[in-house]
Length: 233
View (tube, rainbow, N blue to C red):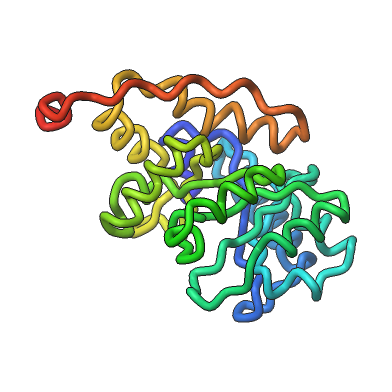
């Protein structure tokens, strides 16, 4: 996965293992694993920086103390990657996000385009973005990996200014690899010259998140291609 990520242009990768009840991973487990991965990368000569992170389930939030939460923030900064539930019976996220913000954390929402809550109601994500949360879309969602409905929702979130980061959400070298360019190809089929927006979502915003800095200005949404132009591509 690391070699594939570097070949695709990735320089820094956040190791966002699932922190949920199923895997029962602890922050200290992830810290040790990152150290081992970093050592292996040095041995193999793979120029990839792997930084702290975790994809935290809303069911695990209450069980993590302050030190545990801080050990899972992206790059050790103020941002926590919070997993959007894939269950249609999930509780509202606004109180959870508000409670984390009161503890001094900033929230990046993982794959809202695949969460039934946000697929049913665009206003639900709009409210969270209005609270200061950011939304991270999986690259392969734009490419149709999770079906046409998820692809459609991904573009709708982007066009409402409710999408801020494109991430690979990679799970392996095959099947779900660390591929960001599939999203760029999907954007290029839909828009004229989307490169500035893609770079903002894969470089500018992630760099600001890791540094705990103000986000760079968002480029304007590119003009959509005509139907004929999309067909030719």
